[in-house]
Image 1 (tube, rainbow, N blue to C red):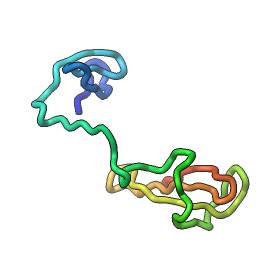
Image 2: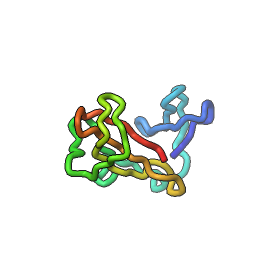
Image 3: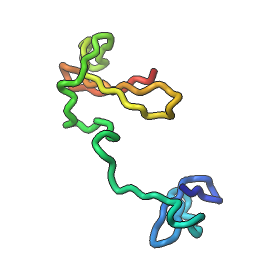
Length: 106
């Protein structure tokens, strides 16, 4: 990962040159090519189910939550580690009644 010398934002590689995604500053790539790893897609284990059609059904249910939209007290949930390893995981909920989605940070 390379950061912009001008504004500190993360840079991305465009046509062989590192370009700042915020201010447009261009620089040569630091380090060798082998030091940079590019990924084109994530595997299913890394994805967080946030789309409207994500299948939460069949996941565990939580009864200690209340949906802000309809007041239902039951929701499906999944847990993902979205921060660093020393931080608690994030719980993603989907109401069993209206389908409203929200997240809870512990």
